[in-house]
Amino acid sequence: MFFEFGIKDMIDIFLVALILYYVYKLMKESRSLNVFMGIMIFVVVWLFVSQIMEMRLLGSIMDKLVSVGVIGLIILFQEDIRKFLYNIGAHQHAARLLKLFVSDKDSNDVVDKEAIMAVVLACMSMSKRKEGALIVIERSTPLTEVADTGDKIDANINQRLIENIFFKNSPLHDGAMLISKKRIWAAGCILPVSHSFDIPKELGLRHRAALGISQECDAIAIVVSEETGGISVAIRGVFQLRLSAEKLESLLAQEKAF
Image 1: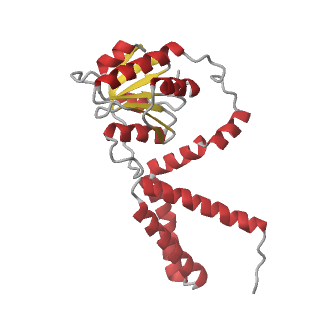
Image 2 (image 1 turned 60 degrees about the vertical axis):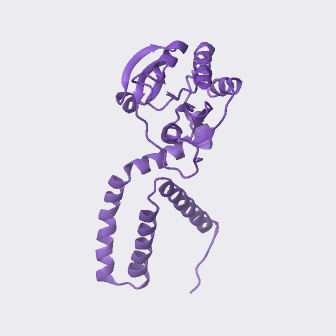
Image 3 (image 1 turned 30 degrees about the horizontal axis):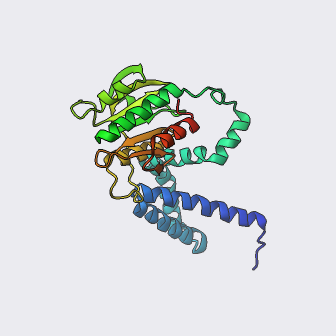
């Protein structure tokens, strides 16, 4: 018996395929690909047993496992689900749609060039001396949990202060500096490390931490390499490497970092 196949069915299949692709990509980045494949195999077997073979006893047992398993998966993969939902909300088309309904109060704010220049000059100075640094600039996503992992400072953005924090003999130089609301909020902070396989092997732990925080929120992460002195910026899970002072200043101004 033939069934009707229309445009609505094509859209349905496309949306399911899109969701599966994003889940597959997310699981691959979080090294949970085998778990994803196991879940897909279980779903296929469950559909085959309950819908095609119509085995009522085995089908009912698997139905119970599915109903309980969904709750277990939500608990087990809560961080991955949070990241998945954030990626949807952070997508440029979704952001544009949101702006139609929500007014952006900060859209007309004047860029603080003085704060940008303080960060740029500090990065260039540390780059020349090959002093490693990791600076995270908070934007719309609150980073209170990140700040709690370090030492609170609450000071004005100052070039010398930034350089002193990342001085090699400083007890805070290994962690990340967190800037929020145009002030240095905390230093020595611990960031989530990205497990992406796309990061070049020559990039170290600072770069992985910068990419990790940029994948989880809309923060801007600036890295000064201790090995090469190169300056990199991670935004929305994408790296921009080997930036000059002019490029870094332009990027921070364009992204309205301050």
